[in-house]
Each structure stands twice: as C-alpha cells, then as structure tokens.
Image 1 (cartoon, rainbow, N blue to C red):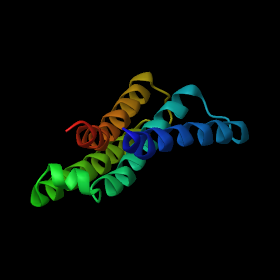
Image 2: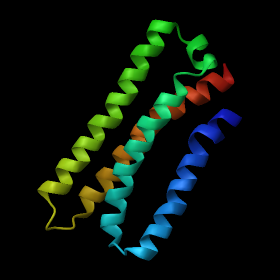
Image 3: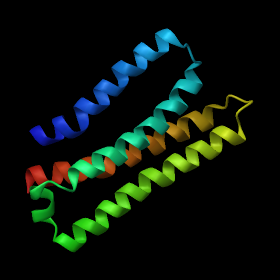
Image 4: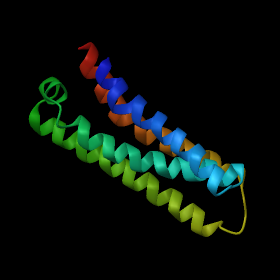
Length: 125
C-alpha cells in the first residue's frame, strides 16, 4: 500500500499544492482551472506509468510481455486524453463551457486511474 501512496497520492497532492500556489500568482477562472487540472492529471498519469511498470511486483504479477502491453496502453490513454483536452481547449477557447471542464477533469481522473489500478493490484495480490 505504501507504493500507492508514494507513486500516486503524493504526486497528486503535490500537484494540487503547486496549483494553488500558481493560482495565487496567476488567477484563472474555476472552469479554466478545472480544465487545466484534467490536462495536468493526464501528464502526471504518463509519468506515473513509467514508474509503475519498472516495479518488479507489477511485472511479476503480470507476465513480462503483458506488462509491456499494459504500460503502452496506459501511456497512450494518457496521451490520447491529453490530446482530446487540448483539442477541446483550442476549439472552445473563447467560451468557458462547464461540460468541457468536467469532461477534462473526468478524462484526467480516468487516465491516472490506470496506473493507480496496477499499483493497488500489485499490493493486494
């Protein structure tokens, strides 16, 4: 369980603290902040994926070729979702739409849940 805290909870907590500090320096609207948070979570998920799939417990639980496939899928999910968020930001840059913000944060949470799942599954099995 300590792997989950070190690999996921601490980076996400640090991200939120740094976002609050950034918000003090450069205020954004709530919608823009939520949209930016979704994109940042996708990037964080890609970084966590790199750390997760070098862990022997994760590779041992999955076979080596399977771990590589899951790592590629998790990385591509984060990259794909970040691309969708960027597209939505550029398409609706003049409008602040709640559905864009909510979809962005949802995609960010989903992308970070993939590497988090592999960490948690290696802790309990």
